[in-house]
Image (tube, rainbow, N blue to C red; front, side, top):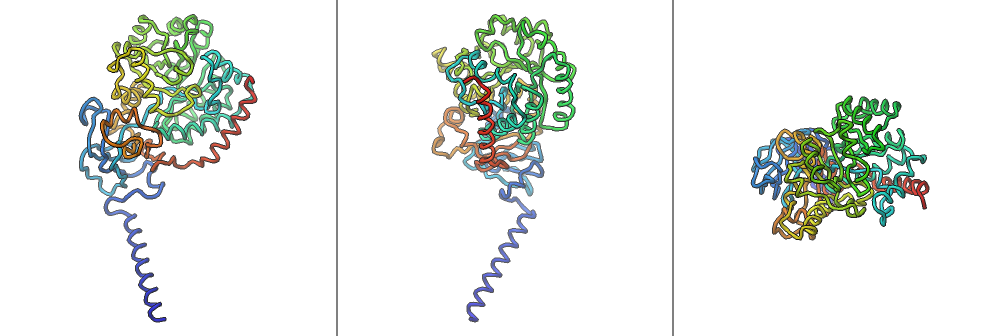
Length: 473
């Protein structure tokens, strides 16, 4: 019995010493390894230590146009990037192991419709007009609710985080004001950086609601910005003009669908924008496929940002954007998912399509964009198109701490040959191990944090079932 008591005493003492050491280690005094989720909320200091590669998108920080650094550290101080370099002294920072990882800025999704996760797969055999008639337009006169918008946006927000997106532009059809409220509530909860493009009209009550949303929902949230959305045409000119006027009043950007399909060629879209006085810096134009040389000259001269949505354009047989011609005109172009006509939130897939489409029509593997070009388009290019490149899009110290870590040791990615090419051609969302927005970890060690996935999926299924009954069968 004495021997048994002696063994138990030694075990108890060892356990107590171990627990005490762990507790003291958690209280500071040197770098601490990643612990609980509560440690990564955008407060304090975090260091990503010994990252195998850092693509800063800032040529002044590293090699080549992507500012590449090998075996480097990234230090986050609160919501901002503090330092990028080798062997940095991060004090008592919390540590994320960067070995075998590639660090790069979070992706900027320049164009999306998050609620459309509820209509994934809808009318996959239709072009744009047929798809809208089957899957979207009927909902303008249907009893869609805030719960529907909340469920669809909640699901899509978790999905975009999983693929490394840190900023999303949500062009909402806002079928009714409650629907908009539900989408905004889900976006706020997501902790993503977002721009909400509220579809404007000539309706005075709706305009007052948009003013309220900016004042009470957008302005108090440092991660949020407002845009006014519209679909310009000569037939819809009053709404386009009213939307531009409201955007100017509120000091926000106008966001439009422009020259997406052949049907738009007879809609007088460019003329409507001219008449509304909307062709100026800050305007974001989505698609811009059916553009003439004169159209591109005018858009370039006006400083208009362009959202390229290649997977959506392919699905709807809309055509192929003229990226090389836009490059010659130094136009600001980023990449977008475009919601329910993409059916995936995989930005890596979007980059592959952006490269492949141009090569297929030019039969030239050297045509713009290269893999380095699309990586820049997906990050800093999107930020430039939004006029947010002073805040996000690169890992320049002082910018917001929006970034992602990609596991370069996964079986679909390894071995190392040319990591820039592999990021575009090999990566899948599952390879994104960490995602930070404003220094807060939204994805950690391969898992989106703070999400009850089963509930999110169940709620989205219930909403999708309701929506389906409201659409033509």
